[in-house]
Length: 219
View 1 (cartoon, one colour):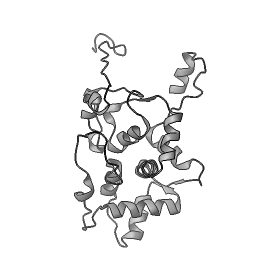
View 2: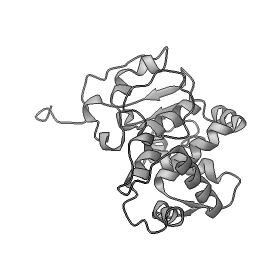
View 3: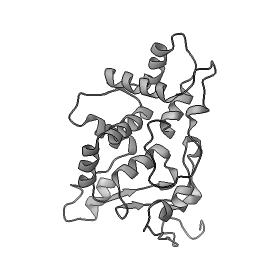
View 4: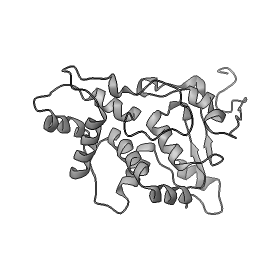
């Protein structure tokens, strides 16, 4: 849809040269570049727990949340961050299995060996690649000189870290509405859009005060 809109505006190059992806699709493109094919498996975490902790049949929710919030690996932040603390030491499984960095490390290795990926794993493994591969970071930063993120108020910590890896100050354009944050259950932190200039020095707020979408009766 976005590609179609770009073509409708008759840009000099149309939509070519512009990458339009969801966070998960972009993360998967990082993992797939020049390597073997990945197989999407929504039950990858459950299969891993079956191998790592035989007999476990409970929910993988705590493990999924830990990866989405990115409890590990976490690079030393260059700017202060707000929001909840890492779930690594607090979100344990009902039977006492602790989500420690070693567990997430084992899961990452398990997925890489089997080329088996699920949605939380896409972000988690892509961030691992960016964390350890400085050349990859530079290649992507040169490729994507300007980055626009829509629905910025709904980003969780791992998504913010992905953006931080790719965009230096002055190269990021964030669009969002702090009144429409609906993914707090997934780790979204509305303070990140409210404090955008603090997290990105030199950034400014541009308030769109006129509603072009809704009829006068709704506004």
